[in-house]
Length: 103
Image (tube, rainbow, N blue to C red; front, side):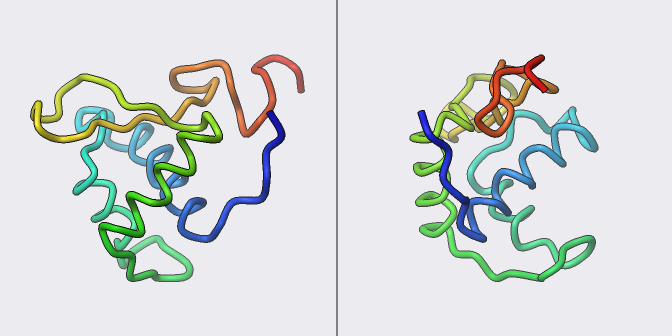
């Protein structure tokens, strides 16, 4: 699979998932609502964005198609989607289109 450049919202969503996995692992995996809040966070974000739930969902669908995120069961309520990045440093073997260990 060829990795294409990410849109700004896709990059923000993936970055937020990765950041939250490292900084607040107890809140992991994230629900769609928690990811939306992280994407719209006003501190430690450049540029500050105002992303809608629909835009976040669209970005996640694209990231899933690129095999960069997956849904997972975990601490999120059963009716919420739980999202985790597929990064070698966290859960899977893919790191932005490269197989872990191939650097």
